[in-house]
Length: 173
Image 1 (tube, rainbow, N blue to C red):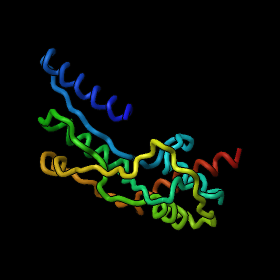
Image 2: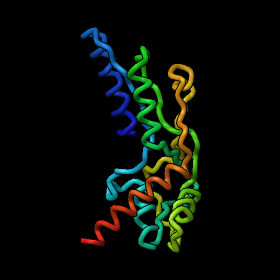
Image 3: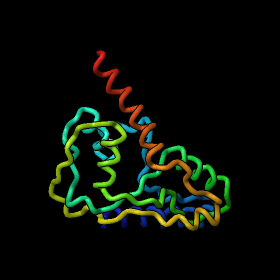
């Protein structure tokens, strides 16, 4: 709740700043974004699952794996941000991918993409873990003509290649 309320306060401050100073603003609500150059140690599900699968460690899924997330490839997000910046739209707009995957499906996709032998293990679900994260991007589609174009499989393959390269560089040292 603190995280969500903090974002709402920031949006309200931006709108107040816009009104008081008569300046243009844009407010993007960015949902889970992934791709090459993500910090391998950032602790998010994409990097965690890829790192674990690349070295055949168990992939840790929290809860029963039914909670969902959506994943937007970084180039799609950049395209959305550029479209927003070039528009006249000045209120909050969601940028993300509306395709939902549950965590068990995602773990299996990562394992399959890598060709890993990692087993999938289940850990206790943190109390504050949301059950569902999925953006409604209808407004972005209507106002900006924007929608993501890179599907999860393609984006994941690109991301895994980059992580493998980083892992190979670390091993060569």
